[in-house]
Length: 183
Image 1 (cartoon, helix red, strand yellow):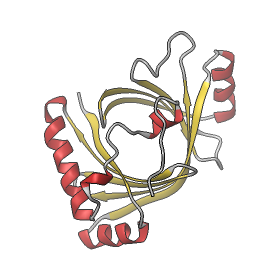
Image 2 (cartoon, rainbow, N blue to C red; image 1 turned 90 degrees about the vertical axis):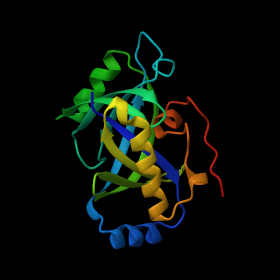
Image 3 (cartoon, one colour; image 1 turned 45 degrees about the horizontal axis):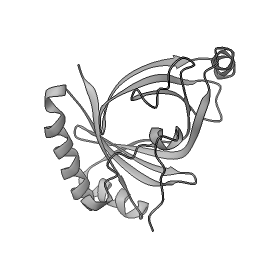
Image 4 (cartoon, rainbow, N blue to C red; image 1 turned 180 degrees about the vertical axis):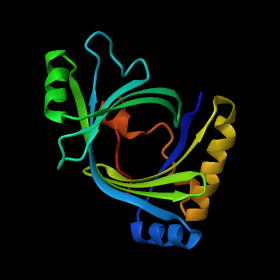
């Protein structure tokens, strides 16, 4: 069962990170504005079941991606995603089916590819700046791949103390955890 294995950390100087990524040979894939809306299930509280129901879209488009994420462990998720072709109607369906909106994450995201890694730089409105180092892997590879992600973080010049263990945007958006920006 392949899954996303990732490490997330805070950062301060985006231009420095981008320069290092380019020096390492990273290829910029895309830059975009994303809105992530997190919903709860009407019959069970997904904040207690380690599941996340997310609708992701660009605010200038009427389409998006609807997803169920199941958190396996810190930084490890199994994801199920489907495209949504009419965002307005889909939001109405969620409302009519009593899926309550828990929170919204508004971010500017830049994505880079370097070897097996996907590296995203997120500037999250009213929250903080995060870099995410992600790689696909199997359950048996979780610890090994997380260490590889940490090694990549070091190559980029971000200290291990900046890793946000147990702090994910879905947890902040859903109110599962409070987040206080560090200066």
